[in-house]
Length: 443
Length: 107
Image (cartoon, rainbow over all chains, first blue to last red; front, side, top):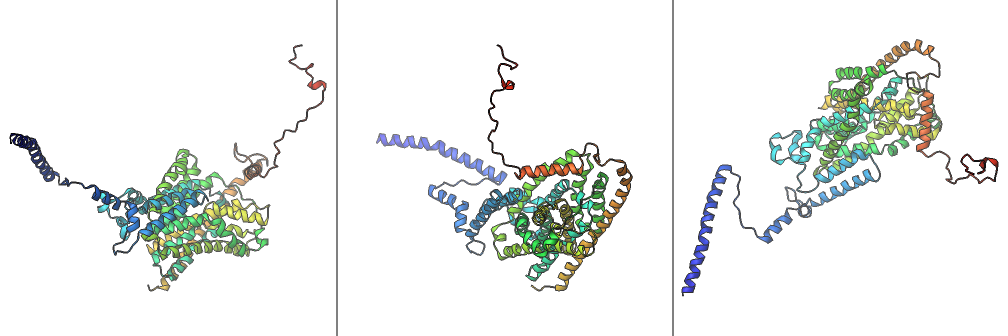
């Protein structure tokens, strides 16, 4: 009996301090809850339940069982997007299709389609507006980076770099090239009409048409202003087709020209003075911005970069925008544009329509440039090789290289590269002007 | 969705028209440029011999073409393929390869 009484006393002695401690903890916890409002009451954990909760919270489980708001199974869509992302990575790394942009775009696509990772939340940009109130707390890394696209900052910075890397000398030496650059914009406006016929809204049709400009930053800039929900498919289509210029253009060029026309040799371009090269960006920025204020942002950024290159007194700035700035912005632009290609936005018939219309825009732009060159030959004393007309679709310098290669196939002694660079850089100006017009008419 | 075709055609026509107007304006501007600068530089060009570079330190267009062609051939591997076999034959004795008459012989 004494033995049991001793044990009872010992037990009471043992739990008394614990109970006192518990009451003290509860008091402290209650005070903390009262003061901060963020403390949570701790509940005992059960191993089985915890493990099950952990498994349910993995992206893998979401991919297997994920459903949308209406209860439809959508998990497979994440898987398809991951496969597409990996395919684009393959094209960028192995096939070297515009790897500088396709690689970050593809990786952004992978990141945004990892269920529950929450790096990009399309809801924050729903309705074409930035929902600033919800940013703190819910925004992921890519949401913050995407602000640069949404606010139109990245495409403009890219244009500064493009301007710093572009030599407008061939264009200054042969001003008629500008007409070829203008004709190649036919693809943009004709595709706008085609997209309208297929049932796209005018703002969407304009964003799809701009793919025909073969100018990535311009396409992204215009789409982010007019139809931000289509940014992913349009960017992927634009950059994919730009990489495919050597495949898409030659058949059209050969179809529209005779062998005799392809053999035309053009006389050497005149030498352009430094003063001309310095005055050109200043005057173009002023004139185009005065005529078309909606194109002022893109054109002035392009010309600023070019002025830095040509003036020769800001060598450091010129090198920075050509290399460091351009590379940094390319990473941010690529990864965030890729992030907009969510399963919900990308896997639908609209994307297929955009891909189809995009290639049509490219073909029409190429044809427009070649046909105008042929038309100009009817009146001009000095014949133009129509192959340089195809370079009017921007895609610097890939399209000019295609003209050179096709010209040499017809006549090995033909050197069209510098002649084709004229329409090529004219195409950059032309597509920026076209984007400004569409923004002005439909924005 | 009902398509307002008149709007679509207006955008098409007006868009192409404005692109051409702006770029034709630039053509005139650049033609004015070339007229002005060529006229300004012509007297100078007459006094410069054909072989002299146009700017100090620059190379002539003909030299640029030659360098470009050489680079093209180099990068395209369009030069004669070498066999990488040393073809110098061992010559028979003559006074020119004689150790006896060599500079460093320490006989």
